[in-house]
View (spheres, one colour):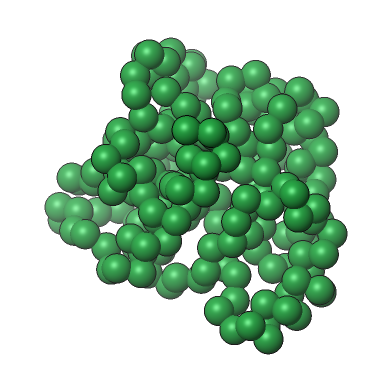
Length: 202
């Protein structure tokens, strides 16, 4: 079992969306996926999703679930957030990869760079950035690369995800049995999983 933590201090950068995308992409690639909700917000209700979803806000619950999954195949995705130094230390000790989603926004970039440093200081060996909500226009990409993303070392960026509005449906409770999302969501889910899988060396 490989474990990846999708983390960040600032809300709105896409931690939860990327976490769901990674788990969904793993499922579509026939890899068992386990989603660990550790955010302070209440967990959603799920019905029939192709990946397991757990309320792991209690550190003891998270440790128990991770321990039970150690010898299983698949991918454990930890949706984590907030400014919690103790959680940074746990990530450094227990996961194979920490990913910080970054949207093209100056404050988001600044917070991401600071969180990277905190994770490294806590002992994390493998920390990477994933650019989220990347524009589709070549002209706009050139602008955000120069204006916002130039401070992020290219070697630490594992990839770029486009903005797909329908992804928000993954963050909401299922009011009926889960249906296959739109093709754009499935495509970016597979892309997210492939980027993570490649970085994990699987």
